[in-house]
Length: 491
Image (spheres, helix red, strand yellow):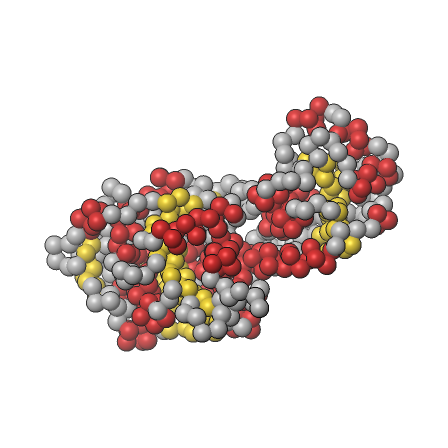
């Protein structure tokens, strides 16, 4: 698994700057002001920062943008990376500025001259999040990411503040690795094994196999995997850091590869379906984050792991399956499989843990991409309070999320002639009818959110904090949701 850079926080010392041989990252205010650290760089490099701050190029730079000055004179550094940023900026601007710096530094060692800048933790987090590369399956010699030294006033306090953010970075990197991993490597068995490894962090992990799922009556989940040689599993991860409180539940769709089954997808683009376990990847990353930062909360993460393949044994359109709840489902399209996975896992979560609230995540519908593109996940909820909590957390972490409607009228689209419901209502309101289907498996008094992350889990072009590929969207927002609303108070 890819590990994030571990920054070394050092108390501000001007004498360390001149001999550093990597790349130096320093801040200039929008007005061209230099803090004491930047002034030392300017003095050593014979006034280069002052000259640049008075140039038209600096004037045209946007807030948070960077400029690289290669091979500066009279200083050991390979380059000076100038970040245009003020002392009073929002967290998103600070994180994005750090990410821009990371892109400019590349794989060199870097020294971030933060000094007294109050946004140092956010800048550093953005740097670490952007310094990610998934290269496990590339042959040849690999170049490791360079180290990061942060010169900061009250370095011990900054490091303590950053610790929780680094735990979130670890969770994000785990999610990215899982989503980027090819399906011949990340089988359901391998996925489960990686989650069991997190027991060493203090999580309690349980893996339920097909026989146990059969005994529970989870035929909606099991039906999806009938055509695959890969065994269907459910993995339950418990973090118990909150005393006797009932847990909050996170549920993830973990379809390690989705051909569409008998309703097979077109060949073009099918290779992207290695990311159809994105919901389970996010849940896994959040659970790792909570364990690493020793969250004072009780949270249970549940993921249904399955592969959807065409085969003589595979589920067919027109079949009827019985869920763990007891409701029957007519299979109209075997490519609408993610909701079948979630239905049984959601019901199990409620009956086993009686959670105080529940959020499920899934790369569920192409329809949500048509509606929201790759900027926002779709948010469907039966509870305004929980929805507000999540949207506030997502906004704080700049993880795009947009509330979508639910309503009884949409139920007519999934009404079946021969069963309790159909697994799809067709093209019209496709993401909404999927949410309505899931709501059938949520008890009326259970605060619940369905997050459709099909557009944000993995993207073709870089985002501000990640290269192209898996983004790790949702790990930071859900961690903040738990931290802000479901943890025990100190003392």
